[in-house]
Image (cartoon, rainbow, N blue to C red; front, side, top):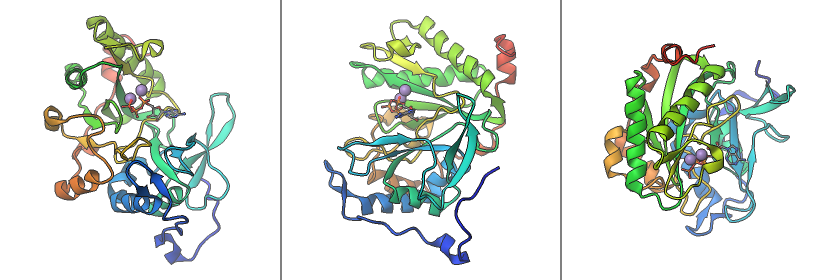
Amino acid sequence: PARRRAAAKPADAANHAPRLTHPERVVYPDAGITKAEVAAYYQAMADWLLPEIVGRPVSIVRCPQGVERTCFFQKHHTAGLEAVVAVPLKEEGGRDAEYLVVRDLRGLMELVQFNALEFHPWGARAETPDQADRVVFDLDPGPDVPWSEVVAAARLVRERLEQVSLRSYLRTSGGKGLHVVVPLSPGCDWSLVKPFTQAFAESMAQMEPLKFVSTASKRYRKGKIFVDYLRNGRGATSVASFSLRVRAGAPVAMPLRWEELARLRSGAAFDIFSAPKRMRRLKRHPWHGIDAVRQNLDDVSRMLGLAK
Ligand code: ATP
Ligand code: MN
Ligand code: MN
């Protein structure tokens, strides 16, 4: 039930990026990166980023005065947006709110013109907001966790998912940690996904209590990794692969092949400069084949006694 707000435009308008105001504005002062460079990044990476966000409700982080001033996390559609669709979805309180849904390059570039730097999609498509098609285990290292332990944690998540016949995919967050992503097709109700991911995180914490925590209140325990399963609920978001991050040096959330994990140095190993170079060199998505994966949580949830 997507409702287009924009009046019909001449056919060729669809191909034109909206005018970019303040191209010279410095967005990342530490690296001297301007709004024009941010726009050029998203234009160049659109073929990679768009499949991650198109058709999903997406939240954005906007920084109208650059990353060192106030930035805000925006979930809802606002006045002035013409190329981005407003999709009404039920809120937690039960009322409808209009969510942002990007349809195409024009929508993406309009959000960039609105100073969006980060893109955070739901793990569900806008037409089926109650059916998860992407699960994310977000590994959040507390202070003093050596990088080697974050790497080991990602491997352990992968192995334990394999034990229940679930294939998973790796990405850097562009920040401190790593995300392990599980595609679901056909999708699964959040009411199944949530207890599964919680049970999974809790079992890691029980197995290795000195290494992992699974409760949000203990998330930044010194020396421990929080297995953040809370990205997996209706309305929750995770950063999109290929999104920039609002952090020093303009890092990028980057999908990887598992074989690349051993050589990875940090969650912020890729940035606005190296990410486009890497993708030009690779030519195909590090998660190539993910769309053909057919798996969901029905069997494993029944096995664990989680199914309703
Ligand atoms: P890191 O590796 O540094 O943890 P991350 O992207 O995983 O990077 P987290 O803090 O672990 O960062 O996760 C934050 C997630 O919560 C984001 O991916 C985002 O989608 C979601 N989120 C929900 N509400 C907000 C908000 N108000 N501001 C920022 N993020 C939010
Ligand atoms: Mn995280
Ligand atoms: Mn987290």
